[in-house]
Amino acid sequence: MYVLIMKCFSIKDQLLFSTLSGDNNPIHLDAIYARRTVWGKPVVHGVHIVLRAINEWLSSTQLKSCELTDISVEFLNVLLIDEEPNEIIKDNGKEVSIQIMNSYGNLITKILFNYVIKSKNKVFNFNSKISKDDVIEHSIAAFTTLSETITIPLCINFSLLKKMYPDSFSILNLGQISLLLNTTRCVGNRWPGLNSIYHKLDIKFTNKRILNSKVLYTIKKVHTKLNFIDIECQCDIGFGSIRAFVRPSFSQQASVRELASKVSYNEFHNQKALVIGGSRGIGEVVVKLIALGGAEVLFTFVKGTEDANRVIESLNDVNINIETQQYDTLMPTQESIEKIIHFQPTHIYYFATPAISQGKKNTFTIKLLYNFIEYYLNSFIKLLELFSYPTTLFYPSSVFVEELTDGMWEYSISKYAGELLCMYINKYRHRTSVFSPRLPRIVTDQTVSLLPIKTKKAEDVMLPLLRQFHLKDF
Image (cartoon, rainbow, N blue to C red; front, side, top):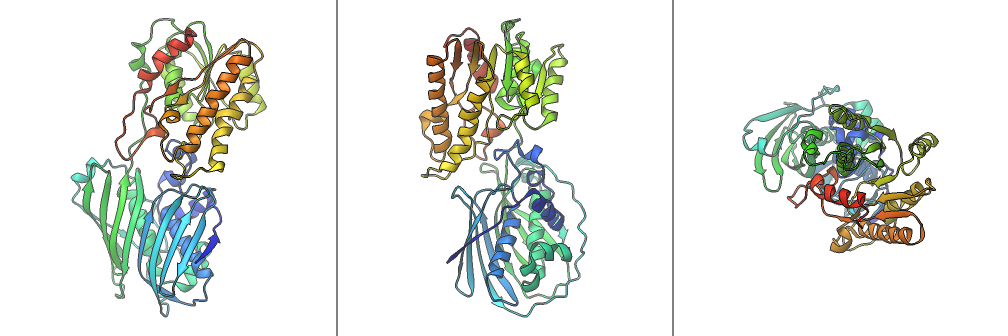
């Protein structure tokens, strides 16, 4: 057994892999789109990880040419762009086992394959140009009525393949690489498509002469309760099965018109409210509720100008004007700092958060804790220090503090530390008051799950708390 340090996958790497494979799913390529997923950043293509891992293994061997006889892959967790992965390899001369770990110690991918020494067949009449597919969105229910099969042509961009995986290009059977690339094109673009999560792959390679350069895909099983589909794939190069999950679509918060009847006229009228993180999720609902109640509102966002504009326009439609400002709590610009100071808020709502990714179960990771602390403590106190006059702050904590959910050690500890910070502020910072209620699980992009979990609507949770906060009844 030996360990190799893999280099990080950059967004440039992702774009190259998309060109090579034809998998155009925005979860891998678009930072604005990916920020709305539970991971908060673009996710590395699973097959990209597999091919780089195999290439790294080949570069550590003395092999001149070989072919895979079979391959099995499990994608257990996602790897984000710019994360540092490690590769643990066991090679007994015929069977190779590779495990990919992320920097937090989570097992990302398990790869197992057998290989034989064999002269390389370099004759492939595959198209070198991949047509750009539309990425189709399917719900899990849609697959219960799908009886069709689809075919996707095998393609290889030889020059790009050689650039990205030079050892694989020189040593492996290129048809086998093409089939692996073809599967991610199927999963990412077609089945399940937009909301896909590639989970398992099992392929047995054949020694057939390649007469038909297309892969046939057929849906074999649809599991509506666990949200996955099983797909059979077959071509002259090999045959096997794929399992892919269908993740739920992004959450949609209540519209201004839906919320209007819940808020009393001018109940928040004496607030100049600064909402940090108000373009989506809980912050978006808070912006709408207090603006409908007569508050003067400035809300911030980090990325996603379209989301911010959508919130503004929804309130403009009912003749309510609010302001917005791009503001990164970790690295604010001087311009953004001056804008929020000039606004002179009387009330501050703090919803800045990273992606609440779970850590490794039964394990505490200091690096992950530091990431949460940067958002929930350091950036919060730096914001507070911008204002020397009396202020009232809303700092949301979480029920995870008391539930002690495994895998959420770092998040829970940071939120508990945040509560303690608020206690110190309330005791020693005169004329500054902080309300830090523990929020239950609320329907947001952060709480989307493959399996059903109990969540509450943001407006049902937040409106009573906003009224309590407004009256300083805490």
